[in-house]
Length: 101
Length: 164
Image (cartoon, rainbow over the protein chains, first blue to last red):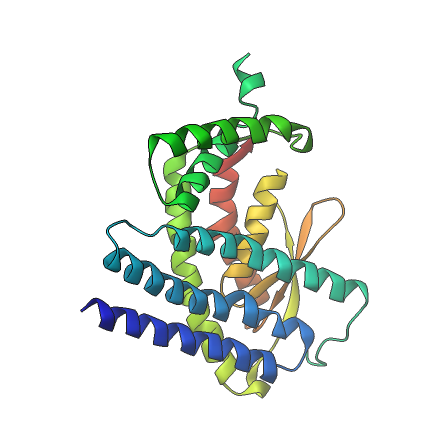
């Protein structure tokens, strides 16, 4: 029972991480590529972490809390790095896609 | 007196919880060690935290956190669809949002939430902290996005994070 839930979560996580990478490859300009790592990957990494928490909580007696911390730190740091990259890109005036309004 | 020992009570609580989570235990020894760290670290670093922050209305904060978690989930699905869809259909653009929230903590929380939720990344804060430049992956109606951010996220942030 636990195994199947864990398996589903890992597959979902992998799919979303893959979509994030596809976005990184496919989107036309720098600012649009920033959207991939801040979002698609948070759910991807998030579901893999939930899978890990369920697996280790069921295998050992104690509840595994490290994954909660990783999630919190990820949610705090991912937008900050995206913000800094966007700020740097604006500073050196990287061209956006022509249709950007 | 109490303020000199606990310059940042919220930071103290957060540090203690993080310490216990890191060690995955609630053993007495770790609570004591965590308390020592949680009191010493805010005390030693208080010079770098000039303004004090209070959290008012913890219930609103909880509701806000749940809303943001839900929106992160929806954001991921929406962005996934946008990424997998046709590239030519995307209409990206920059939006400027005039800020009503004034505290530095409130602004950074708002900027983080904007980056985590549907199709928007915060790019730049103006020097006078009056407006935030946001890049959106797909814009149908710019005003609608601004209104949604203001209603959904900024209002609870103003209520919760106030200087004191």
